[in-house]
Length: 193
Image (cartoon, rainbow, N blue to C red):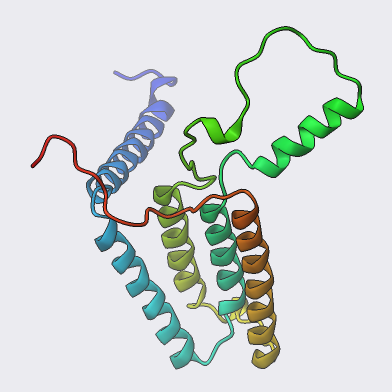
């Protein structure tokens, strides 16, 4: 026979077990998708095409927030994790404050050492965030409550200007600090002839 304390906890445990099982299955699905970079991005582009088709067929204006969010993700993907301009600013602030030499330091010549490019937003997180945002946007198109009417030519011009200005700034930053966020050329394979 059950006591009064056990009765309410059984449904709660069942719900927690169901949530835990769903989270494990979701993580397993993501783990299976991890090595398939091209297929992941093609699936995301397919979802984006489905979203665009949905917008055209429903004659809605859902695209503005998604486009700006995807641009933000792209910029984070192109930026290095440790921004050299911020490091230069911190060094200049320390010099202005009269920081004293605290002892021996490691060599700081940037040209003498190998520095791999580490992204601020890794490719996996970029894909996952982009895919989630497209799926949420697709779900939002099912309700007229999220359809905010705008004059679309202004929206297109705003996005193009925003894209041009931010990419110009990013390219100038890449040229100034001499980094390329992409692997260009043939990758060396070690141990094969």
